[in-house]
Length: 279
Image (tube, rainbow, N blue to C red; front, side, top):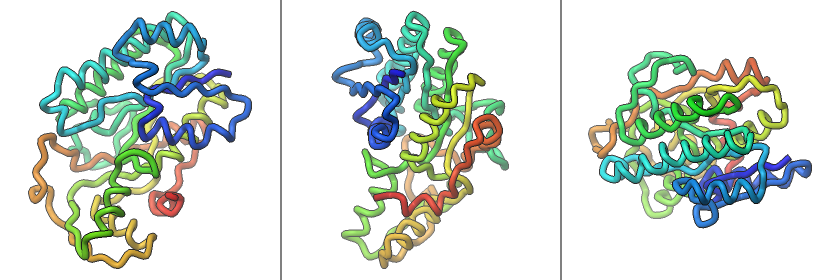
């Protein structure tokens, strides 16, 4: 089996690479943006023709949430045009596309965890482009998985966990937002779930949610990070209004994971138990 991974230099691409050695039966092809630019369809066709992948895991994305409000064209190019290019090439090569999406496709106004069938209503350019990227896939493909996730962190790339640990080196106290509720997701666990779905080869194509289990605020997440790492620092809960951003963050973006549990027997670990896995 050949699995081609786009965006290999990003957080999720590196997370998949970190566990790829466990799967000797799979030939992984890791392509960063300099090798495979998803916004260039000819480039996509050339790479797919060379490696003839059975699956393509698309982790390439424009993820600068605030900057997207200004760089709208760039966000659309990567998150919509790029995804459409991949879907078209997957159709030509009979490749199953596994595409990563986000909780930002929802408006954050729900009072209960979002299900895959709930109506998206993005409030940001980033969320809108990710939604339109999602919508391009079923227009072209029947065999695909779209996996929505949230609050990704890991040893790789830029993320909340690494930011908190770095800030703690030079600060005795921090103020962290306490009125945005979601669920952290350890990228290495998500990577394992993606490979598990592929290996089980059950079909059941469509949209799935995955994050760790439970919910918390960013303040609670930060507090747990410091607790687990035995870092003595004062953390104060504050309102989102104290940290204004160009793009509005969802107030509530917990994802319901019953579908992925039922169909693939995947049991997400609790977000608190996953933090110590960070190396």
